[in-house]
Length: 253
Ligand code: NI
Image 1 (cartoon, helix red, strand yellow):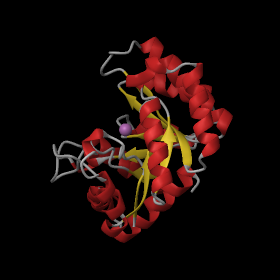
Image 2: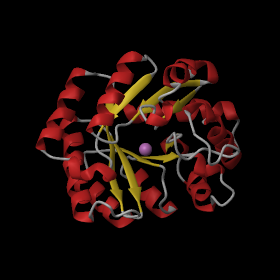
Image 3: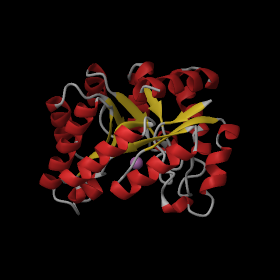
Image 4: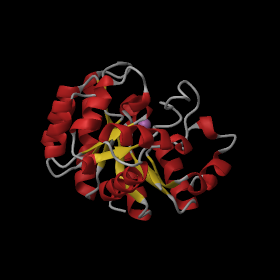
């Protein structure tokens, strides 16, 4: 059985078939799902889904794309949601995205720091989205040594992944692992300790081969497991067992 450690089941891409899809996941081999929030609105939806389905967990947070909404009122809403729902297991997804700079870097950094502080205060792991912001991402991690978590859809170097692992963090891999040009992701997946590695779809995005470009969903996570088994020379069953255990450790489930 697999653990999809990062799936946006609240995304509108699933509006037509969300219920059937989530209810059918255990049958398709996915025992657990973490649904992170991307904004206050999406965090509320993630909270609701985790209350509705026993195999769905949630996180609350504002993505770098929504960094400009983060203020004391929003942080207080996240605090309240966490206190009311024990199935909220992380703060996320939060972080930095310097690829699209619709939100200025200083605003992204301020929101990231405020939400890392929230994770420290609530003693929850953080789900970090970091794209083309490696140096600033590591700098903020080092400002909050009490906070551990996962760098999801990891796009950094093997060297940086090893630095994160040293600090107690996990590294998340998406369908990118299965792409033909995925040399970097494969190198990282081969080079870090197995017990720090988690699998995710990041659906509805990042569908693995042979579904690339199509809508992604947790039932396609088996492809990442097959690829990881090949990279690490393990059986698919071992990869399922180990990565599911890692996901549970990460989110303290
Ligand atoms: Ni995401």
